[in-house]
Figure (cartoon, rainbow, N blue to C red):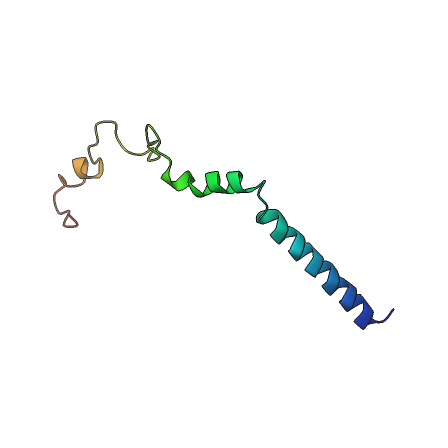
Length: 76
């Protein structure tokens, strides 16, 4: 077997795999799953989690408390 034959076999195999994946993706059995996945961004969550762990519970900005009171601090 020379490199041309191996290249042809690999190309043929990849074409068959591509067609198989395409048929699988567009089959009627997969449609409900893909429709559900397509609607996930529109799902309504009851409560959004707060991922900011550095925020204070009362919502105050802790950076303004002490740094603005110091004399000579002109970055505010």
